[in-house]
Image (cartoon, rainbow, N blue to C red; front, side):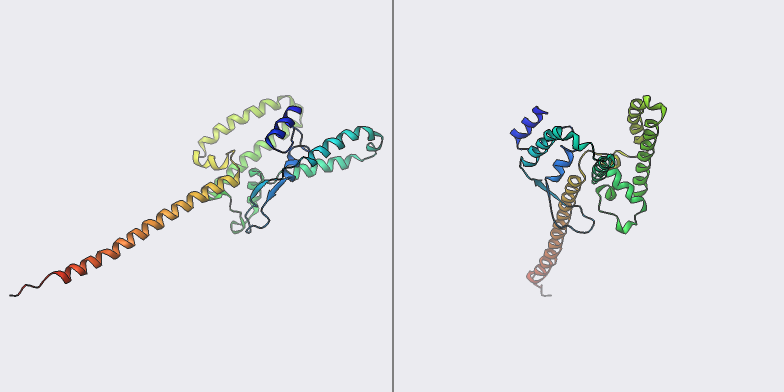
Length: 231
């Protein structure tokens, strides 16, 4: 933890460690996003508020909690469960699997402009999501049963399930459905690519139109300059 805090301080990054409250939730609270966006469009990430006050206060309060154990024991356990429930639900935002689950009951005209919906058919998106959902349910069923001892082996088996998906999906489709690159970055690259393609096509059309406009003028000038031969 001390090494991570030292590295983050030198590089000007927010303090974060391997703990949900101190890391993910803290960094998310420091994000700066665009205030207004079009319907269905996610806010754009603008940067991080660079400061050390919140991280310092977190550790100070954690240290002070040692002296308040006699008071903290009166806090009901449902309060703690509520905190973890809130962190779990809030962390679902931006996860592609959760976004694809919501597409099952969403009309096509209300679907957000996700990058994978531009390049992958909707039925294949649903099929990929269904496979992931079945694997998740099986893992959860094994974890809560007496066979929980084989849970690590079942997690390893997901690697082979991923390999079998190559038989049902093309590499291009999997690059959009199962890619580590964030959705916003992929969409930005795709928009830039489409914009460059449109500019190239419009430039070609303008050149072709200019070429067609020059040819009739040349034909008329040649007719005028040619002297008529007297019989």
